[in-house]
Image (tube, rainbow, N blue to C red; front, side):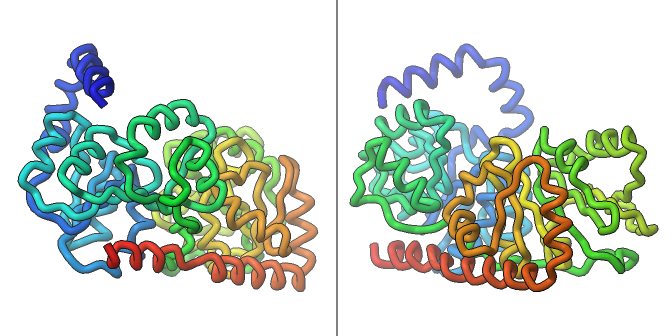
Length: 382
């Protein structure tokens, strides 16, 4: 741990201009945590903030939620009114020492794999139980994570992994098997909330939704759009909207921006505002999950399965394999290549199979829910 502290201070000195700018932009990051808390949840960003909702709703006691990103903090403040939500302080040994000194914090709950050495070290030094929720290890960062686990594995009390693949990855990195639970992704415990579409968005044709489309996947998605249905493209990141528009214009295709609020019969809609993906999943005939064409690992299929939709995805489903592999075997999901237009057309012409696939995907989600209950039981029995 001394080695990490030395490295941190060297980087702090080398990057001092950056930290000076950060100090004036986000001064909160340089302030220690104040107050006593039963549970301190730390999340990276928006996705992690959302998935802990099912756990937080079952807990008693004072709760703190910190986030690495400002967008995570903003969403956290909207979702968790009445709770303390703030940006995570930088992982300075001094700031973390001050954050725990003379404080009564019972649990530090790190969501997914937020392994900050100073945070974890000073938590354990002050007898705080350190637990990883929805633990994930990305194969691309195995070497870096192995280094961190090597430093921190004796300071972490328990891990609830996001599925069997992640459980195996933690074991491979040397974490004691007895301290790793057998849980699925916490995303599956979150019941989707939705709202009606804007008034003019009434469709007389089937709707196919391409959800959470990632950078580099846009052109492939556009090449697979269907002429006689409503194609809804929902980019994962809004700055990619301009690029999608550019592709569509180059192909001479008309489209509608959902933010306009006015639908004029176009068969391509780009959802260019946050918080509407689930609303379109609810009325879709077929859903394609983005982040699976290229090596992103895939995005959350829960909402689509909850609304009993047949689900298509590309080859890269590593992040959702605990659901997707079983769903493919059971017939509720289908894995496709980069040219999948015919797959969609064939499915659209098979109403019976659409219904069967949707029912199957829903049953699988129902079967693998329940990680929340295991986590709550652990926390209340400590």
